[in-house]
Image (cartoon, rainbow, N blue to C red; front, side):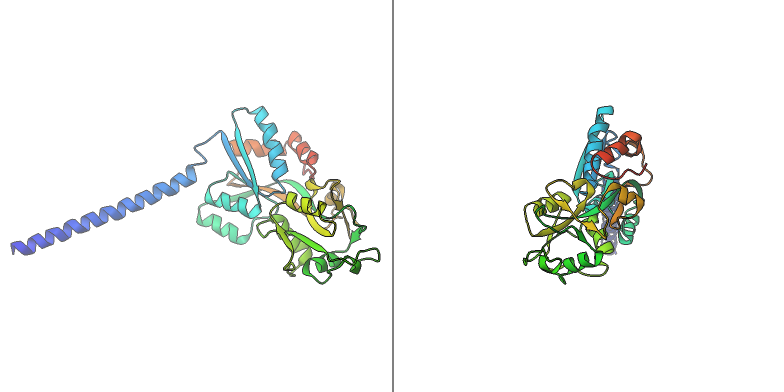
Length: 293
């Protein structure tokens, strides 16, 4: 009888210890989750911005000038692509996610699962310019021709014009994490797949540099990355200009976003308010994009 009671006592002790371990593990998990979500909030003077390389010049220039007005503010700005920025917002490692496309349905679902409420602010507009090497005689393309180039149905410059060289077209594209790629895929490819030998690059700058140094290349970049080092091609007879984007004549265009968790607040609100101010919209125009105000 005594032995049976001792065994029972030991089992009760084991169950008590097990319950306490389970409770402790749950509490530690909650603390870790809360810490991840609150880590950014505990740094009121620090702002982390990640995402689209198209929005990057706007965010960088605005951050520099904003910190002159608010010297205590510490703003970190990084690229990586729209998908990277939104993933950082979901993970709680960014206060603002820059995106050159609207957030996807599956990304919204991922946000909801983490208790994130993604709210986008349109800070600018942009046209996606199709560019070639300055020595290329090509002046204009149709959307149908551009799609054929990127899907591989047109593979030589001589297939486009009598003055074209009988050389293979070097197709330069953005990678799949890019919002610019998503818009290009939707507006131009329309269900077609980029040819397998296309160079898939991680930034607008990389595309512009590659086209500028490759005489037989073609690529696409945001308006803010246009320079004399590349030649912009008219699309459907329309040049990629701010005016054509505003009027809607230039068809490969999109809004540029800054996403926050909920309505912007604190330093994030101050920063986005600055971008939406007259001064901020002047910065948008000065770095080559289209103001929205």
